[in-house]
Image (cartoon, rainbow, N blue to C red; front, side, top):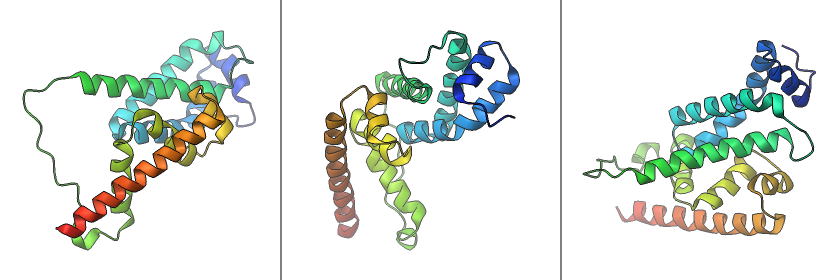
Amino acid sequence: MDNRKTDEELLVEIGRHDNAAVRTMVTRKLPRLLALAARMLGDRNEAEDVAQEAFVKLWRQAGKWQSGRATFDTWLHRVTLNLCYDRLRLHREQPVAEAPDRPDPAPDPEQSLSTQDESARVQQALASLPDRQREAIVLQYYQELSNIEAAEIMDISIEALESLLSRARRNLRTILEKADEQEKAK
């Protein structure tokens, strides 16, 4: 595995169906794609499927890649987000005869202080945000992208991104406060 090669150099090699270049690219990009998809979908198995689909698209498009329009990372993140939205739409559009039983999302009293429970609460709150707000939060805080990179991926201005982030943080705070109030009322 040659970590000295740039993404663009690897893309050229992937376009020539170089398996070593594919392995290097997967090793380099998979953790971030999995994290992005898992945060967007809330399901690790679905995230793995999305990451696999993103790499298949990468494999197919590598020979046609032209630098200059967008950075490779921007393109790969956009592909991953689009695949996540496809899955989210699919889940929303599937009618069911009966609502599934869901476990109580409130943490057990003895676990309420654990980091894992707090993470689950935040993930649940994150899942309840509108798609674009969730996307902005995930790109900014979980993918650790700059405002410029996140705005480019979302195809919006930096001002629009900052507005989305502001609304998303405000909504998250409200959702988490309501969850705390409900927990205290029990």
